[in-house]
Image (tube, rainbow, N blue to C red; front, side, top):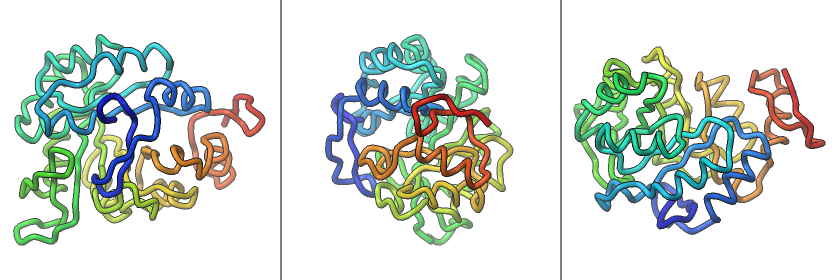
Length: 256
């Protein structure tokens, strides 16, 4: 989200508006989304607070878990988002700058509320054991931090989930970074969410079966109508991949 609109770009650049966040949130909820994630993608870079009004209005329209991130730098910021209707907060650039926010937030609201979101790019720099570097401020600032090291530290500090955003794959619809996702999933003991690159049902299936992800964030594949959520869930169930109940193709509730 940027300036109150849902946007989508490729590799964190060239974002274009794709719709109204309140209308889109309601539509995805009605289609059977398991959870909604809302990122204010320029809040950290612009050093401003998240658009709390949008958070509140989205929360009024959906009745599924709602995770919000962007510009969160303190426990007070996290509290404001939770009081606006979110169930989880996503920490990213603010956590890199001050890792104590992870442990402080976990103590204040519970580990289940705190998601450590990581912007990651394959750089192969000397000193990065994994070859993957943590980037902040919407892909603008390289930190020199190894992604696997940061994932382990985030878990130790109290993050209840890790969201791995691949900058290289973001918006390409060419598939998730399976190597990155798998390596982090094998290093930590909390759920890992894959993000960036999902463009087909095969990509979603691969990230669960080959990369050991516990969940996947989908944007372009849904925003541009490549597939609907009921179609996606139906196909995953047909392949024997366990997912939460959703809408069947005839608009009724599916169950496993």
